[in-house]
Amino acid sequence: MSTTSTPTHDRPMSRRAVSAATVGTALEWFDFTLYGAVSATILPKLFFPSMEPTAGLLASLATFGVGLAARPLGAITCGYLGDTLGRRNLMLATVTMMGMASVLMGLLPTYAQIGVWAPMLLVLLRIIQGFALGGESTGAQLMALEHAAPDRRGRSSGLLGLCSPLSQILANGVLMGLAATLSAEQFDAFGWRIPFVLSFVLVVVGIFIRLKVDETPAFVALKKAPAKQADSPLASALGSHYKTIVRLMLFFCSPAALFYLIVIFSLSYLTKHLGMTQSMGFMSLMVANVCAIFGALGGGYLCDRWGRKKALALGSCMTLLILVVYFPILDTQNVSAIMAIMGLFLGFTQFQSGIQPVAFAESFPTHVRYSGSALAYTGANLLVGGPMPMVAVWLMSQSGGSPWPLVSLCAVINLVSLGMILIGPETRGVDLNAVAEGAPADALTPAILSK
Image (cartoon, rainbow, N blue to C red; front, side):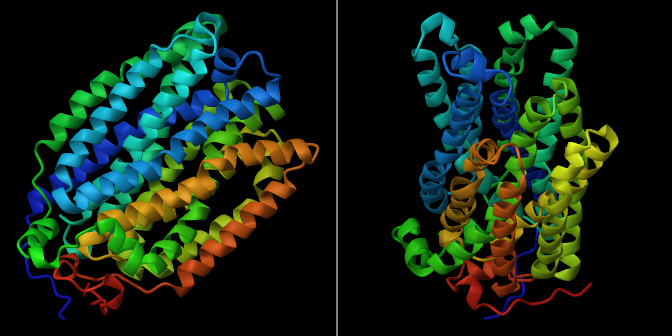
């Protein structure tokens, strides 16, 4: 089977699809990130006040993990619908669901007002957020990449990879600005709620942008050959592509774990363990996420030039090296050094995340691409991403404040991830539309695109 792309790529539609996916996903990540930022600082005392401080922090971070735990359900449900009904409509539904859950979260009474119902409703809304993001992440990636020209898929992937750090900048910038302009009492009383309530705007913006994008060429081609469609995309993905799903999931465990270690646990570590102010913690994360944007773009660009495997291996080796010196540099409490090491760490973590969308999309045929990619992506977050902040807090408490047990655990995860990168196939140049004709992506011999 030839892997040369036959359809003519509609470049204006391709740019529109990438823009819609990037902006819409960044808006959804903004909502999800807001919760992550306040779960380590504000929510323990508002929703779990009866617990001692460490237990309250663990309970608050557990609700963060609940959102990640709900993502596989969203991935499975939206993956099935996206593989059978198309990518576009699912993207409209997920952005609406995320925005409405965030608005309600901003209006939620605290434990002091309604008692145990407060944390219960918080968990419910967090589950809805996780469900929406589980379907959103992969769907937006496929919307952009199935529209993209083959020789620019990596660049499009890098743009998708910047959604998370961009949302971190926006969320932490808003919270830092509110913390700087309001008193501590005002921020705890209502200031943290403001960005959640304003999520209503995200619903309107997200729907408007995505209404302008057509269904992807790969899915349109699949619909023209219904005999090639799986009766159950999920069953087909798990039955015929489970090895690929497991390999990709284990690869992404390291970027997922390190991402949440940096953006969630590090904020708690800086403010609770080292005694830095919240505003300084938010500023450090903001600088790190600026670096992460360049990391995601760099990963996407280099994987178009070097191939997916070589670029991913570079990012994985760099995070392993940085991990060894990360906590010792944080412990210096030197602000410039802290910002630099957090920037490098998150930058090379997001370097890999900028390649992840295209590496996943090119590994599955069209009829199971949504289901397979979503299961691998959300599985990694469920396995290590969501639990990482809680595991980090627990290990630190058990080790008397020493970070080395945590570093050792993350190093093992990083090494497993690197191994999965090295044993996987190179997929640069695979024609996503040719895969729609029914051949498994791993069975294709990728055509290396001429430069």
